[in-house]
Length: 78
Image: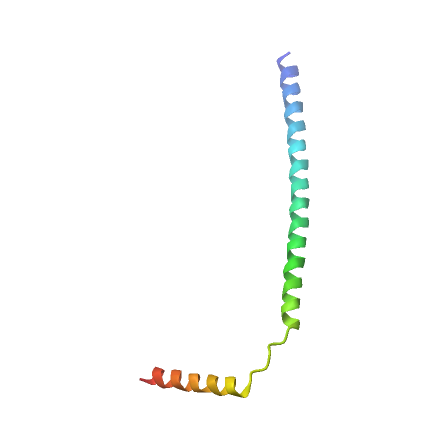
């Protein structure tokens, strides 16, 4: 009688353990799908950023940048 109760308890516990494993696998698949979608979005954003070329600086802007760099270098030497 005790053996039958023990066997019944083991069968019931193994059934719930298997059900939990299936739920974990489903969650993993959902997580994988979410990750794939997130990575696609990131890659789309990266490729869109690469296609845009920065605008060319005007001669005045370039000269101002050169002056700023010269001044910064002089201040570093001091």
